[in-house]
Amino acid sequence: MIFVIKFLLKMKKIINTPNAPTPIGPYSQAVMVGDTLYTSGQIAINPGTNKLEIADIKSETKLVMENLKALLNEAEMDFSNVIKCSIFISDMNNFAQINEIYGTYFFADFPARETVEVACLPKNVNVEISAIAVK
Image 1 (cartoon, helix red, strand yellow):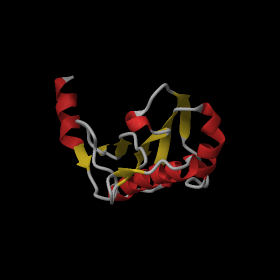
Image 2 (cartoon, rainbow, N blue to C red; image 1 turned 90 degrees about the vertical axis):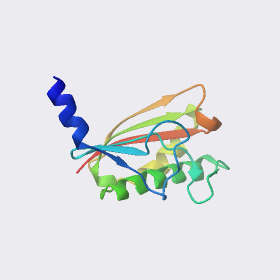
Image 3 (cartoon, rainbow, N blue to C red; image 1 turned 45 degrees about the vertical axis):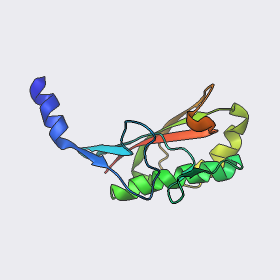
């Protein structure tokens, strides 16, 4: 068991890019283990200004997806590599609008996903999305 853990830690690579928001806590933007990428949840922070952009749910969701795209690109992947997404939203009434934007990033062989309404998200945003992708 210890050998397996040490082996996995050697395979672990931290993914960072200035094209996605800087973490607001003790975590990495994404972690690559072997051929699998695990992204941290992305919110609508503009990586260029480090400011929140939450004027409306559609533009907020688009920025979240663009932040995920930046992490995928840094790992030499795209949305076709995504196998699982987790979506956390503050109001299930926004589901259709979030889903509309989210759907423009996938074209076939859609990833598995759950969407969960939560009481509060970091910085009081309306949507947070994370992804798992495989090369």
